[in-house]
Length: 54
Image 1 (cartoon, rainbow, N blue to C red):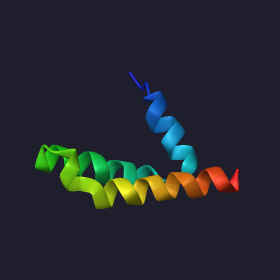
Image 2 (cartoon, one colour; image 1 turned 60 degrees about the vertical axis):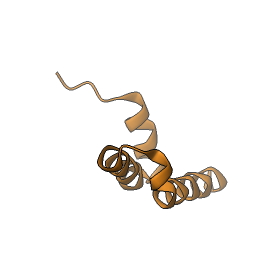
Image 3 (tube, rainbow, N blue to C red; image 1 turned 30 degrees about the horizontal axis):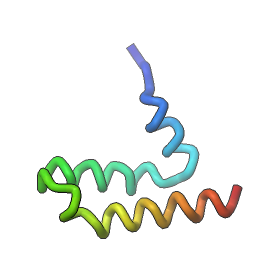
């Protein structure tokens, strides 16, 4: 079954998917999203740049 998560599909379009995965990995590693602020900021920056390009 090849159902792609709509969130993943949406993020993929932005070109920020790798950063999204980095945030996910960091959170699962550290079990605390607050320790992943750099990854989160990087992802948000990428998303904002995508929004500006649209």
